[in-house]
Each structure stands twice: as C-alpha cells, then as structure tokens.
Length: 309
Image (cartoon, rainbow, N blue to C red; front, side, top):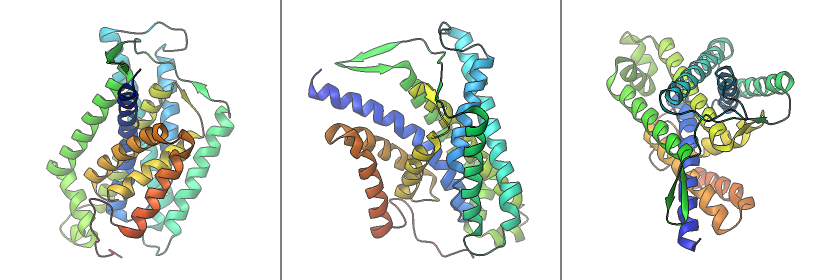
C-alpha cells in the first residue's frame, strides 16, 4: 500500500467517523438553539441507543455467527433496527426533558445543565448495573462486501453509514426549513416569548427538538455498533465529547455548522492519528475546542446572538 493509499483509507475512515459525530452533534445544536442549554445527558442517549440497536438486531436473529443477510431481508432488518432505535432514543430524550428539565425551565443559572450531567450518570450506571461492564459483540447483518480503491478498501458498512447519515441530515434540513414545526422551531430559537405570543406552543417545540436530537443520537449509536462491531456502557463519553466539540466548532445552535463540524472532527481524528499518532488524536481535537472557544466562541458558522434570558 502506497502512502497515497494510506491517506485515502484514512479519508474513508474519517468521513465515516465524521458522519456519526455529525448526527450526535445535531442533538446538541438543536437543543442549544432553542433553550441555550448544553444537554450532557445526550452523551448517554447515544450509548443507550447503541444497546437498543443491539437488542433489536438480536431480536431479528442477527447474532454472532449468523449468516449475513441480503436483498429485501437486509433492507427490512436495517429499516426496522433504525426505526425502533430512533423512536426509542427519541422517547428517552422527551422523557428527560419532561421529567428532569421542564420543572427547571424558569430557574436561572446552571441548574438545568447540572441536572443533565446527573441524568447522564443515571443512564450510565443503569446500563452498567443492568447489562454489565463487558463490551458486547455487535453482530452485523451486512455481507462482507468490499470495493477496492487502489490500495484502499471501501466496505459496505461505510457506504451505509454515509448514505444513512446524508439522508437523515437532508431530512432534518428539509424539516427545519419547510415544515410548520420546523418554522416554529426557528421562531422559538429566535425569540421564545414572541413565538408564544404568536400562538406557537413552545413546550411542543422543545419536546420536538429533544425527540429529533435524541433520535439522531440513536441512529449514531446504531452506526457506531456497525462500524466498530461492539458497544459498551462507556462509549457515550468519548463520542459525546467529540460530537460536542464538533457542535462548538461549527457554531453550536447552527444545524449546517454541526454537520460540517462533525465531518471536520472525524477527519482530524483519522488524519491526525495517521500523521502523528492515534494516542494524540484527543489532544488535537480538544486543543481545537479550546482554541475555538478562545478565539471564535461563536464557531465557524455561528454568530453571537443576544442572550434570550
């Protein structure tokens, strides 16, 4: 394999990682755009989503050693797994908002953000105590199909991750821009009091933001399992911090910025590990977080807006 092939392989890996981080970052940015709240529980909604996906695959007979699927059986299995995982994750996000955060809606200060940290640790420990600390093998229904790109290899799982991520991000963009609820979300993000006076049900808008963001995190958790072939109670922390960095880099509260930020972080992780060392990837990524917060706190695509409080 030539040096060019090595970089091409890392580009493929980086785009796959970036697609997962972008989906997770969208959850941060949707909630922040409306409530100006960093939802740290989002880390472990992603983790729970990966376990929901694992359970759904096992229910459908996709277990280690089972033959790969093809054709209609593969399509239906993936569709069912994505739908169940996204709906379950979305419902979990709504439950977090309704039970833990709504009572704090009018409380000033960091109480709501601290509450999300507590909820995150509750989810973390529930999975740890209920399922165990061992990593779980994540069987894939995908056939071992590979495409040669010179000396690099493009696998079917990367194609699936790219296709599903692009579809979900395009669907979210359409939803926010052209649907009635999407317009209500944009109006609420601009000025919640004015939106309420115009007849917009702000509570419903906030629930929709939590549902959509958490559903996308669930899809990201499923993709994590397909990509790495395992899941664990600990995966939310690292992936969540990188996705949060992606949201900040793109401009937290900015939907296109979260997508671009996710791709950039994925590429930095893959290319930085290749150019320097994999052990330095986190140093590079979180140095970027610090530099962005210091020199451009609004992010690459964000703009400084007046505080809504």
